[in-house]
Image 1 (tube, rainbow, N blue to C red):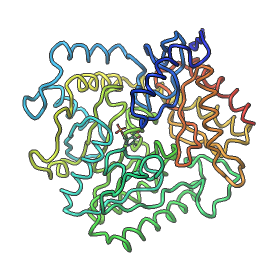
Image 2 (cartoon, protein in one colour; image 1 turned 135 degrees about the vertical axis):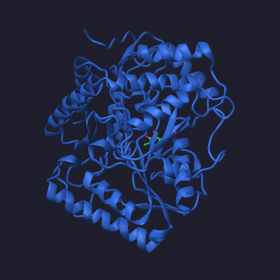
Image 3 (cartoon, helix red, strand yellow; image 1 turned 30 degrees about the vertical axis):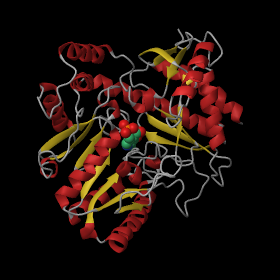
Image 4 (cartoon, helix red, strand yellow; image 1 turned 90 degrees about the vertical axis):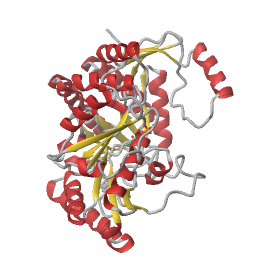
Length: 456
Ligand SMILES: Cc1ncc(COP(=O)(O)O)c(C=O)c1O
C-alpha cells in the first residue's frame, strides 16, 4: 500500500490560503522549502490541511529521526505536561534534567568523566560549548572549517562558513575566529573531477595523503595566523549538515585529535545534525573512533521538542562557575521527558540496525543513479545520512543549484518532502525518518528518480 496520497494539486487551496496569510503576517526570514501546511504527522508521513499525505524525507531538518508522533515520546511528553511544564532548573530542579544528563554522559564517546549542560536550540548549545572551551583554556581563538553551519546566533553565525543567506548584512561578528579548509576531496585542488567517489570510499592511501595535505593547511593557519598557545577550541561537524553532507575522513579527525591533545586545545564535535542515529550509529564520531572533548547535540535529542546539550569532559564543563551558563527555559521538563523516551528507543539495538539497513538501500540506489544520470557529480554520506551533488558538467563540477531547486519542487508536487543543502545550494539531501519502512523508502526514491530523469 502506498504512503503517498495526493487529493489535490500541490499546494492545495487551503495550504495556499494559509500561505497568503503567512506572507502578510510572518517575518519573511524563515525560509520555506515547500508551500505545504501541515495538519498532522505520523511516522514517515505528513498530511496537509488539504488532506494530501506526503512522505517526509526531511524530518523537520533532521529532527524527527524516530518518526513523527512516535507514541512512546508523545506519551512521555504528555505525562510530564500533566505534572508541570516549567519550574526553571535555576530555581527548582527536576529529575528529568538530571536523568538526561546522566544518560548522555554514559552514552557519549570518550573514556573519561563527563558532565552535561542542557539548552534549547543547537545554536545556543554551540555558543555555550565555546564558552566552556574559552573558560577552561583561558584562551580566545576558535578554529572552524569551510562549509560549516553552526547556527544563527552571533557566535554560531560567525563560525558558519556560508555568507548568503546566513551572514551577509549582520556583521560585525565576534573576533578570534579562524577558518581552515575542509577536507572536501571532491573539490580538492589537483583531484581529478570525473570520479564521483564518496569520500568514505577513496582508496586508503589517497585518502591518507589528501588528509595530510588538508591537515598541513590547518597547521599553517594554527601556527602562522594564530599561534597554537592561543587556540581555545577546534569545532567541526563529522559530516557537514547544511554544508552538503560531506563526511570528514576518519584519518583527518584522528589528526585533529592528536593535535588538540598536544596543544591543550578543546576539540568540539557539532553532532547536532549527525547525532541520534542519523548516520547509523548514535553519534557519527563513533565510526571514526575519535572522541571529542565536547559533543554538541540538539535536533534528534528530543525528536521535535526544543532541547540541546553540551556533553563533555567534566573538567572542561566545570570550568564555568555557577551562573556562567544557563537560561530560563534551558532543559525544559517536557523536552527532557521526550529525550528520555528517545534514548530508550535507541537503547534497543533494532533502531540503529534498521537505520543502517535504510542507509545501505539508499546508498545502493544513489550509486545506481550516479551511473545513470550525468547530472549527479557525486553521491556521498555516512549510513542513512546521504546526499547527491548536482552539477552542470561532471568535468568542470560547476554546481547546478537550479537543478536541485527543480528536483525539490518535483518531489513535493509528487508527494515527497526533501531538502537541498550545500555551500552552493546544489545538493539534494536525504533526512529520512529512521523508522521508515523499506517500502516507504523505495516509494519515495521512485518519485525522486522520475524527477532526476526529467533533469536530463
Ligand atoms: C550542524 C548544525 N549545527 C548547528 C545547527 C543550529 O541548530 P538550531 O537551528 O537548533 O539552532 C544546525 C541546524 O541545522 C546544524 O545542522
